[in-house]
Amino acid sequence: MRKILIVEDEFIIAHRVKELLEKEANASCYITDNYADAMNLVRQELPDLVLLDIRLFDDEDAGIRLAHYIQDHYHIPFIFLSGYSDETTLKHARLYRPATFITKPVIEKQLLAAISMALPERNIAKAKAIFLKGKYFEDITYEKLTRIPFSEYNFINREIRFEDITVIQAFNHIKRNTILFKFCQPKCFFVMGSTIEKIKEILPAFFEQVHQSFIINTHYISAKRDRHYITIGGESVPVGAAFKKLV
Image (cartoon, rainbow, N blue to C red):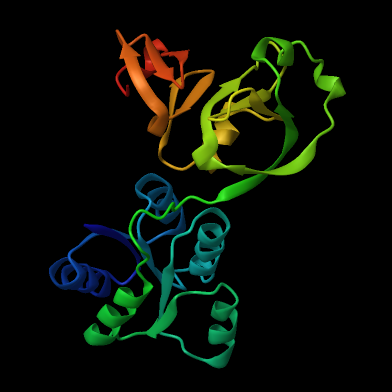
């Protein structure tokens, strides 16, 4: 069943669209009417499609900002819904390359046809790569890496694919505010200056924090040991007491 996020501040329209899509498009729908909740739902649920009202309550560019966020971080199509169809609105909306633009009041057949055309093929990775500023290392052991002084790193912007990351580790007590990314490719690491709290904000929902210093990619879990450790790609990652219920 496909997942569709409806970002709409008119209650009647939102629930009429939800009822229509769940009945006619065999979809599971989520509704929200504000930018913050919409952004969190995109991260947590990774919907297949977003129906996006351009203006929400008093936040006139909420839909545009959300479109920008989706475009930067995900391979998720979105359709703009709007009661405004003037040339200025259309020109602005076109910059974000929506799948299409539908005016309100919504015509049911038009909406169903647009959704059928916009939905992507199944099993396509929805999370994009992201550019981060740090130092990438290849063909180096973890032990040798941790002995390199932070001051010797030559930081550059590098594209990091979320699907390639297995473990993210924070070294806030050893190398102040340093984050280490480990990958499915052996002996490859990426180091950057940040905190685990900031890193969590940019990660898709298939990442889970299991310790104050560790985040794991749940796609790579191969074993669990007594709720104290999780095995990721042959590495044992500790599970903190505060996170055992999540695990």
